Length: 478
Image 1 (spheres, helix red, strand yellow):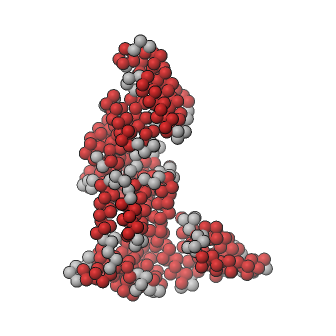
Image 2 (tube, rainbow, N blue to C red):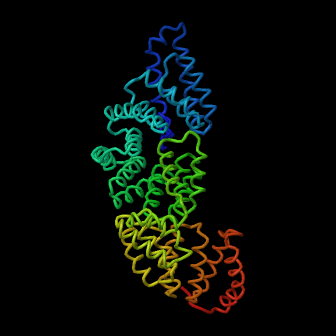
Image 3 (tube, helix red, strand yellow):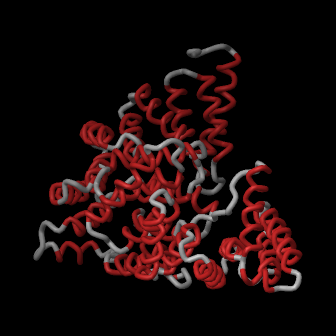
């Protein structure tokens, strides 16, 4: 779920903050409830002061303190929708969704046409799977303000989750396209646009939109999730893994868990993937659907799957599964299934990537390169394709070309130990000794002591001789 934490007042400029509070003060002083109190002006003044302190705590990430101050502000004045909304956002940050929902509902009750409150409530309801009610609030917010990014983003998620027809998606996309073409579009608007473009098959456009979002906000969760999901759709498990790590570091929410489960499943770890999804409390309908799909397709019995092909010889799922299962144990057999899967479902790039990877496993490097180079043109940022191409080039001893691929991978995944390892070897083979040394050192810095034990031993064995060669000024120098 991608609901935003929206403060009423953005930025740190005191004139903006002061003007906003002055408007709220006028609103409170004008309310019948405030005028009915014997000390209405003092109560209103106290409420605004408490609200401001709550805002300050909220901005500092002191969410419980903010909730306490918002509570006192609300107690001081009977009707304070701004405090109700911000209290809801602070509660949301504390993981108290049900309490946050009550606050958002109260804000909407007090100000029925307040688009910010409508959008926050609708967004939260999308996360809970209450799509019918969420749509009512979100559509109202958009009708009142077609530039409300939070409402449009939440409505995008709702449409995607409920498998809305293409005409509805295109209508929503046109609104977001217009929004992103105006001056100073937000990262959330670009991210929502990207998600719709993916669903409508506009993959090239979606990649551009995601990158635009991440340029504006590198940690934007919606954009990161869209990027990781698109990578998994395209079979780029290596690229998706690094993006999913960024998402998990920021939020261990169900969305991150679902992406990690998809990654595990794509890497043949179906039991771990299902267990991860089973561990999610109160799963949304789409999480349940993902888990059920995995349960149906988790069979690892290749013989049983081959038997099923007797009645459905061109089933792309079964063929793709067999392609994956046989890739390391029987590369020659995997080749047949990978090729058939690709022919049965030519629009699915995963099967073509599997075919290329199977060719690499079968040591048919020239044939693999031919396919992988074509795939690179279609999906230039796919790390999995690049990694397989690099392996093929390395095995063919085409070290200069392999170096280019490994450099690209290391740039995209700067914490990838194995990329530095092979990059070090390619420099070494090219007698570029200082560069080899630098990359071996980077490998040692990022290597896992257990996972990369063999590679670590090889590098440590090579380093003394390499140091002497560098000292003796041998090899090429860039």
